[in-house]
Every structure is written in structure tokens, then in C-alpha cells.
Image (cartoon, rainbow, N blue to C red; front, side, top):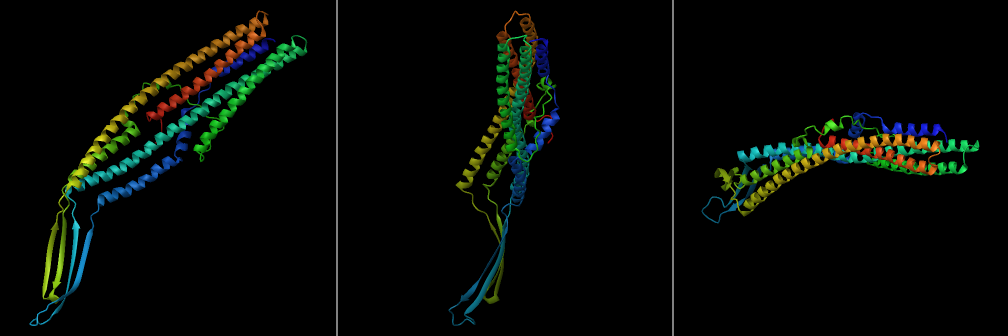
Length: 409
């Protein structure tokens, strides 16, 4: 072999050691277009219509006018009476009247019903973003590994071809060319396996979001601000899941208040007009009915009070879980930044050592198997760079999603 082989080795190392940075907007735009076609998000948006109708029902309540009517004949067995049969009838109207406190609570519950539906849309979007990020991360990882292995396989094939030319000129042994050809074939098989993994990862993404046109290759994520992003303050109040849990807890609290106030039953007011003895007697009667609350109303109030306490505890649990998840995501991103930087440094060092090994081989101080052994180590460092680059991008996107930052609603 000659110095051309060394040039190919080093070109391969430098081209992959400094991967091109893409723009975050490309990834986030693709994500936002994808998730909005998801059935879970569409279902959450459709639920806002149901919430609107439920709010109208809460505002109105089961308070309707009730009309009663009755009629018949009265028969009197009295020979002195002028008539013994009389037509009689009565008509009445009544309606339960909602007490003022209950009206205020029902109005607040109606507003909460719509707020909860809106928060569920944001929660569905956040959940779908995490699912997209996981699928995109797998696709991105497979793609970077494919780039590395394909590049290594192509360069190995070129080196093997150069070696064969040298053999054909009588300047080297055939066994050396055969060893290089075998090494190139091994790398080609690795590249084929990586390409299959990339196709599978892309198919998984297409299957989940069939309405979106995806590029042939995953866009990269700009991680220039990744280290700074771990220091950005992300209050729990901005988290959609925590916000939803707060609204649900408030709803449970109001429902408990409503149940306690319902222990005093709503009165029913009525007005009735009657005609008796064929019109000889008429009457206009006002009526008020107040049900007496019993054990059932009391037990219902206690149940809803307990439910409100549970909802409040669930909200506190969601808050703690979010804080934990956020801190884990930050630590993961910081670790990913560090590991990626170390992988790049290792790759650069490996390239320099490979240069020394190559010179030693050209001077006859090292054998070809020794060169190939270190070259396999060099290939391993390239795959490590690809792995950690993918982990870094995925961790960065996950933290952005978790903190609701850099995303357009």
C-alpha cells in the first residue's frame, strides 16, 4: 500500500468527526405538523365540543317547568241537590328554584369543564411530542450509524482496490489484498444491517403519522445551545400535565362544595288553578315544596369531599414527578453533551494514532493484521461518535418538549 491509503483513512475520520449541524426549526416543524394529525390529538380537540355542551348543561341545570293537569266528574248522591254530576278540572305549573350558591358553583364548574378540555388538548400534544421524539430519535440514530458504516465500507473498498492494483503491479503480496477485501466485505455487511435498521425506523414513524410527507433522511437538530438550555428555568406551572391536574383538583373541590350545598334541597314553587262543582267553586293555589335531605345526600357530600382530597394529592404527585423528570432530563442532556464531546476527542485522537500506525506499516515495522486491528478500533470510535450524537439530539429534543420551550402551540 502507499500514502493514498492513509489519505483516505484520514479523510474518513475528519468528515465524520465534525458532523454538520442542522436547524432545530426543521425538526420541530416536522414534529408539529405530524402530531396535529394524530388521532389522540384530534380526539382531544373534538372533546372541546363535548365540554362546551356539558358546560351549557351545567349552567342550565335540571331545572325545568312542570305542567300538571287533571279532570274528572264528581257525583253527589243527594236528592235535594239541583245537580248530582259536576265536571271538575285543575291546571298547575311548578319549577324547582336553584339556590344562589349552587348557581355560582355550577357557573364555575361550567368554566372549568371547558378549561379542562383545553388543557387536555395541550396534554395530548405534549404526549404525542414525546412519542414523536422517541421514533425520530431511533430514526436519527440509525441514519447516523448508516452514514458511518457506509462511509467506512466505501473507503475500505477503495483501499482494497488500491491494494489489488499494487499486487497486480507486483509490488505487494496477494494475501494482503485478500485481507483488505475481507475487511471491506465485513464493513459492507455492517452497512447493510444499519441501512435495514434505518428503513425500519423510518417505517415506524410513517406508520404512526401516515398523513405527513417525511424526507428521505431525518433532519438534524442544532445542539449548539444544548449546554445553555440545561440552565433555563422551567416552572412547573408551564407543564400541561400539571396544569391539567390542578384543574381537575379544582373541579373536584367545587363538586364537593356543590354536594355540601345540595344537602339543603332546592325548593319547588308551584301555582295551581282549580274549577270544582261545575264552576260553582274556583281556586288559585300557590305551593312550595322543600325535600328533606337524607342520608344519601350526606354520604354523597362526604364521598366528593374525599375525592377532592385525592385529586389534590394527585396534583402534588404530578408536580413532584414533573420536577423529577425535568431534572433527569437536564442531567441526561448534560451527560450527553459531555459524552459527545469526549467521543469527538477520542475520534480525533484515533485518527492521529491511525496515521502513526499507517506510517509504521509503510516502513515495515508493523504487519497488515496489526494495521487492520487498529483500523477496526478506529471504525468503532466512529460508530461511538454517531451513537452519542444521536443520544445528544434526542436528549435535547426531549428536554425542549418536557419544558414546553421552543415549541409553537
